[in-house]
Length: 164
Image (cartoon, rainbow, N blue to C red; front, side):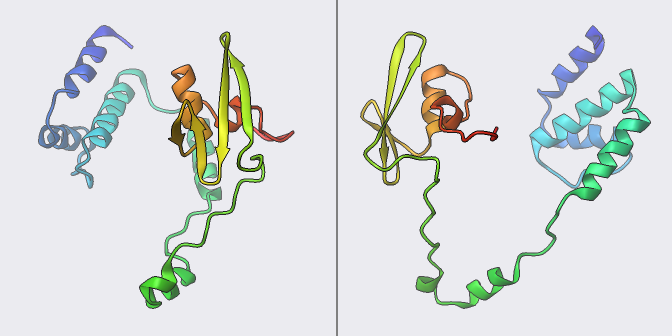
């Protein structure tokens, strides 16, 4: 990407939502259905890049259309959703979540060595405990320890064979 385009995209970050909507209309020839600043910024930046460097290849467009066609999209809520709304509030309480089968029983300790330190996590009935603090997920603990995003099951070696 050339420096002029980079500066133009950086300038978009400073625009207010109304100004981005105006820029969107200039580039796309229609008003944006969204007033979300992040969405407008990404769309306008993408269009500027397309104009400067070219659009997707025809092969990429065909593949994207094929993937979109194969997507299992739900346009309406399932029937049981509407039936549940008709029930009294006390009957609508969400069922207890099933415990993930990859987790050891509550009270177990998960251990992992990371950069010379031993990470020990206690498995609770409704989450995990690390350094005396409760966590809802192993991923949150792994992120806390490493400073980057991790799959918690992968970090602690709990993934079953053949799973990613």
